[in-house]
Image (cartoon, rainbow, N blue to C red; front, side):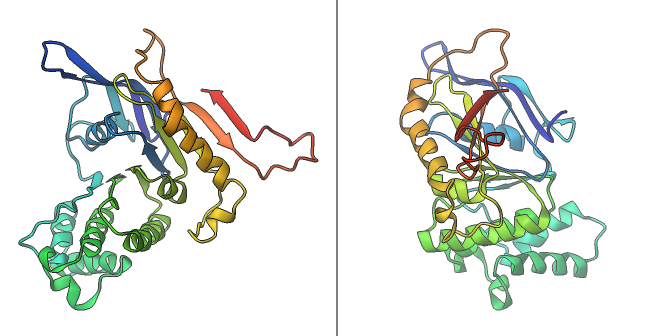
Length: 301
């Protein structure tokens, strides 16, 4: 069965300035199911942001295919919303109008009152109400600006929401608050989300699955790690779950050691480089031989 978002044999090469080509990543193949929250982790230079731009329709791959809901991804679309690290708000518009601008484009037949009510509802979901929605971006804090970006993206009801390190520029307290707001809205909307982050703890808190990339050049999506911690998740309680540190240690080991060991290996012609599926579960009863499984189960799909 095809995934809602299907990436097949995606490759990106750039001129290296010396008359040759640099292969950033090669033959990346993976899928994202409808309603799934997937996070991708990897070191700088492995091509995470390039993959994000291709999924958004803002860049063309050297080769490979991206399909969403059975249709080829070609160019930007209102069906794919993007939240950037640098907010990307229109500075001459108020908070409210930054949201209504996209809603009007998405729903051109709606009345002005309906557009405003819809935008106001989504701003309220991220804690922006009252006088603040009449302010311009220059009058908002960094956390407030990112809240506007998130509200704007969700208000357009995209089929796929792309988050490019949306909390990277925020302080720890603000980051935690907006992460909680994001999870709350995502839970209500059942949105499909693909996110880039460098924060391992953030990835475990938010994701259903974490994709791990090897270092570039010739980077690849090497593993898909299932987050075997039930939802809803609370940041103050999640660390008490028996799977939390087992998953975290696996991610740290991969990024600190194995991502380098597996890097720089060109793909074998004819092979599809799908990530190894990894499931770590310390909650399986050890006294039930029929149900007992290894704590770490890695299977090539």
